[in-house]
Image (tube, rainbow, N blue to C red; front, top):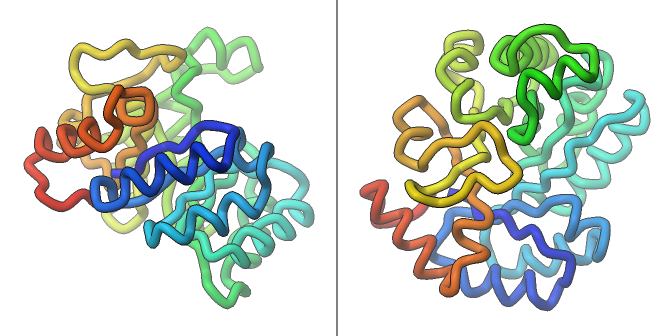
Length: 230
């Protein structure tokens, strides 16, 4: 279980991360914090000792993405995202850059954002349901040599069937029973996502917006029957 530290201030992010140490298995750092504070934020949160998932969804020409992957690898992050829609050449360039790093991050391809539905995809020229597009992009990522993918809960089973047992499946859009979906359209409870075959859950607002984030994280871990979060 990874807690999404989606806030722009380093002091607050660091305080939250320290509060969650021992209650979650790692931290997801996204664009909001990285754009506001830069690589210094990654280095600061690394002092918690928790594995870091740098979720930048890199999407650019192959040479640019390769350079960004090398820079991110130098920060010692455990997981790093690129966007599968960048195409095979971009994905392969990212893989080669990661493999050349002294400390190699595991590369994940983002498939279809959990905030999108079929109508949103159609508006961008993508025919078919989010599930079809997620499987298509997951296969592309596997062929390019990435370590895994990020997909919505409802796509886990189909993506696992397409990829086989080895690739990592990381799943956002997690909402405990009774909580609002917010701006995400394709969600599931933590237990549902694990039952479908997720390897790692990314949980943001249900933990970070709770009155007691640490207590909320531990409650989710207990709900899943896990004494030690992963």
